[in-house]
Image 1 (cartoon, helix red, strand yellow):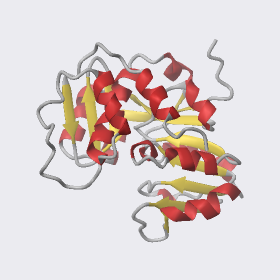
Image 2 (image 1 turned 135 degrees about the vertical axis):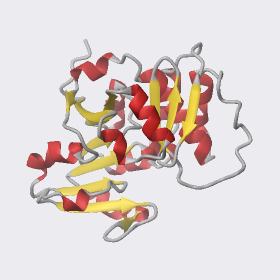
Image 3 (image 1 turned 60 degrees about the horizontal axis):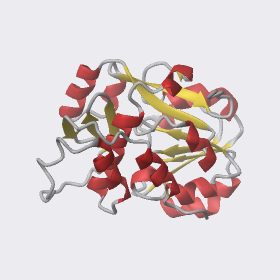
Image 4 (image 1 turned 90 degrees about the vertical axis):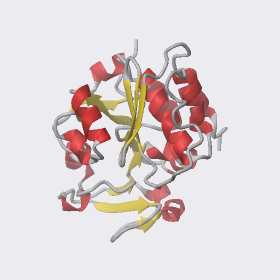
Length: 252
């Protein structure tokens, strides 16, 4: 394995060192960081009353908060990636080359469905409703806390080297499993997906073939849904997925 911190250093190095955070919201499902741009991350989902830095994040630079992505504290790491996304994804030219998809939290799987037929597909992270799609593939969902029909995260060591396609939740950056999972998926086509995706072409050097992040259509609606505890509701009107083939992207 290469230096596992390399991708974290890349992301932190891409963040604005001057721009300050104007607002941080840690909702039930999403954490949102607002500066000139907006960055999203999935909230930890673990209740706590003891965040010692509460009330002190506003005014921090996006780069300073982004360094928290290296923290082993889940809340700090979540804030870190949200801050980095607020910087990296703001007016990002890469997004203009991406294919915007239809609405809904399963739009990425619907987009890839025609080429997944008969393939061995592993999805890292549970996406609500995925079992209702007719993907006609050998589908396995891996979860840290597995639900019905999911397999536990440790199954990745046994299954991912033999997969044809891997859909990798960007939350793996927060829980620090990304470097190993990317290595295990090196024989597959890997899609890094979720509202937490940073739009960086350099992710191709870490084995990512496609980015499937979000574009924000309505910032006010997004903020309202996050503050009011919404989850997949952000895909109704506030945001939608877009997909970029990194191999086919000409960054020149």
